[in-house]
Amino acid sequence: MYQDKTLVCRDCGKEFVFTAGEQEFYAEKGFQNEPTRCRECRQARKATRNNGNAPREMHDAICANCGAETKVPFLPREDRPVYCSECFAAMQRQ
Image 1 (cartoon, helix red, strand yellow):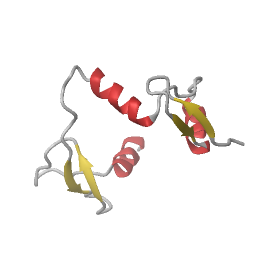
Image 2 (cartoon, one colour):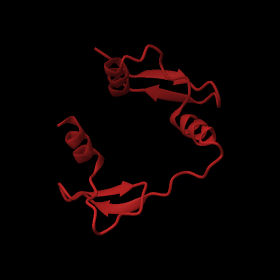
Image 3 (cartoon, helix red, strand yellow):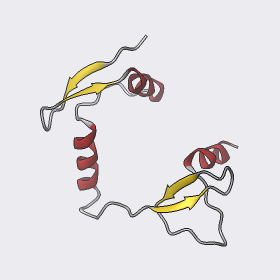
């Protein structure tokens, strides 16, 4: 149903691909508009909207549920379980 599209970034003018998978994701989330910025410009814009704060420092951890290696935006403690994003999301749905 969806096909990859080549779009032009409104900030840097570089062409980027809006993949079929990304289009499907946008449709599932109910987004009406296609992206107007490439991934790099979106990330740069997001970083500047963070009130000029430095990007989050990420820390390595092991998921207490599935054992996968993951990164978290806080310093893990030995007395508290840490979950990967997939396991955390599954726990939230329950």
